[in-house]
Image (cartoon, rainbow, N blue to C red; front, side, top):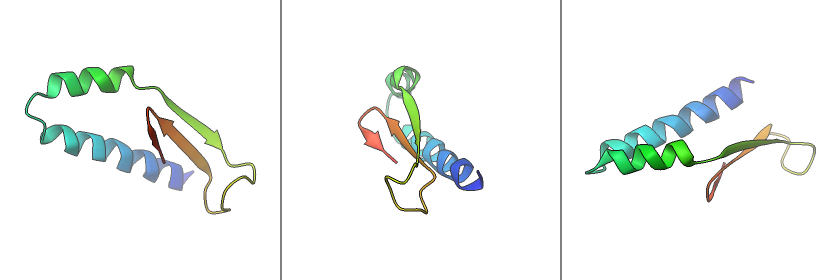
Length: 61
């Protein structure tokens, strides 16, 4: 669970840092609100170090 928390924290921090450099943050915030975020539990389909896989729009973590 700590790894998942760390992964989600880094993901949110990356999004927030990226929005700081945007000239107009309103479209960024609106697009984040519409972005689906889903987690898939590792049931042996990936490396044992991976607990969950997160899908957000076109990104996979």
